Amino acid sequence: MIKAITGTKDILPNDINNWRRLENLIESRMKLYNYREIRTPVFEETSLFSRGIGETTDIVSKEMYTFTDRSGTSITLKPEMTASVVRAYLEHNLGKQYNFLKMYYISPMFRQERPQAGRLRQFHQFGAEAIGSNDPALDAEMIELSYSVLVNFGLKNLEIKINSLGTPESREIYKNELRSYLKSKFSDLSDDSKKRFNSNILRIFDSKDETDQIIMNQAPKILSYLDGQDLSHFEEVKKYLNLIGLNFSVDEKLVRGLDYYTNTTFEIISPKIGSQSALCGGGRYNLLIEQLGGKPTPATGFAAGMERILLACQNENCMDSSGQKIDVYIVRIDQDKESEVFKLASQLRNNGITTEHDYLSRSVKAQMREANRLNSNFVIMVGGNEFKHGNVVVKNMEDGTQVETKFSDINEIKRKLSK
Ligand code: AMP
Image 1: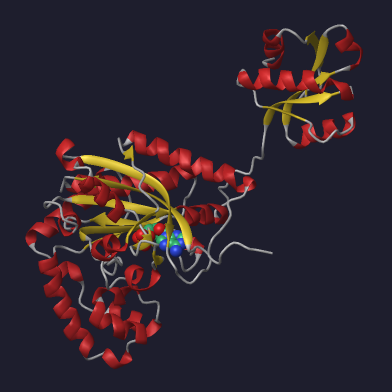
Image 2: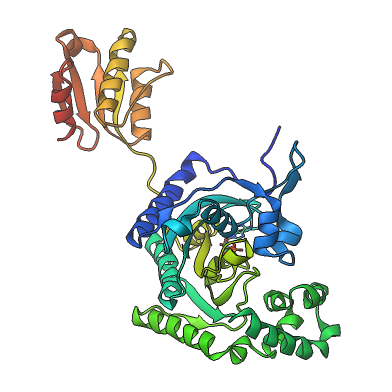
């Protein structure tokens, strides 16, 4: 039997309720903050990601689904969305139309990581990008917006961590300090961290190795190396978060994996879901647009993992477990009333009433059982003596009451269903 590829997951009809609840919430929150949806293709030219995300990142160096198509072009399934959004922004000259633009997305992403709970190879992210402003209020808004989705979904155990990575210039000075600090500890570092020492030294902060962590706890931290402008930007972000009463902690080890971040970075974690605890991450990326061929344009954004949000929700018992519900189940009393049932179902559905009927030639008893299983509010019985007089019986499944009504009068049937 053919099975789904490792690290991918089917979202089955029973799971959909909570996915839709999350998607609807995302849409309504994004509308409140005036973000407009953008959809981009699932695959892009590989160079977009290698240039946009950075060759030394884990994503580009070992996680991308890359293949050569029949015309010899190197294609990659998108591992994240920011590079694609910026590509679309530049390609369609959106900067000319709007000197400031807020966009959001909900989309599958693809990364060839080692699958485990909360880590998939095809997963879904929602996120937002605001392009054209360096206002620290916008960094705070990103944090508030992503947090608001999580909280309104029902999550309670959330921690907001923020940090600033400054500009590449101040970061370079800091990286040199870090390099000299780590040189004397080099032999104690894990193999992975040894590699990162040369390729992407800040990422050593993300190491899960215990010795690495002890070493990094004592390492010099970035905030002491930021210049005045970067520090005041960071202070402003904190001021705005305080202003709206959002609790956060400053975590100087929060460096994020991607090369394009400048200034603010943030993460929202759910301490209860194990090692893959980050639900959402983001920050400012003032250099990316230039890096992808545009003119220097400040921007900020975030991405949140939807499977992880659902996992956290499961752990916190905030999933909506109410099952399927329909308005009407039509029970066919006489086997030969197929056409009448079919027509009535069509009329009800066209009147906005969720309707189901039998397709398996089931007995009346079995049809009633099915109506119960589907949590139908009403049953309409077609057939028997009543039908000989042109009537159907409408049964209210909650209180058991029954009324007769004229089969040919859909408005009358509708009225009976609203009682
Ligand atoms: P990133 O784009 O790496 O900053 O990730 C943003 C968010 O996407 C993370 O906080 C996770 O919630 C989610 N995420 C990232 N990678 C995966 C994955 N392989 N499987 C499931 N969720 C993921």
